[in-house]
Length: 73
Image (spheres, rainbow, N blue to C red):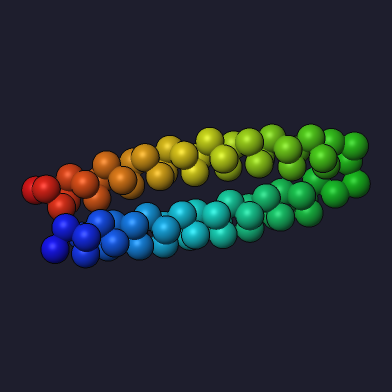
C-alpha cells in the first residue's frame, strides 16, 4: 500500500511539473516573439529560463508538501 501511495504522489508531481514546464516554455516563446528585433532577445530568454528553473523548484516543493499533507491527513 505504501508503494502504491508513493507511486501516486510521484505521478502527481510529474504531471504538475509537465504542466508547469509547458506553460513556462509557452510564455518564454511569447516573450521572445514580442521582443523580437531588440538587442536583448538572448538576455531576456536567459532571465526567463532562470526564473522558470527557480519556479519549478518552488512548485515541486510546494506540491510535494501538499501531497504529503493530503496523504497523512
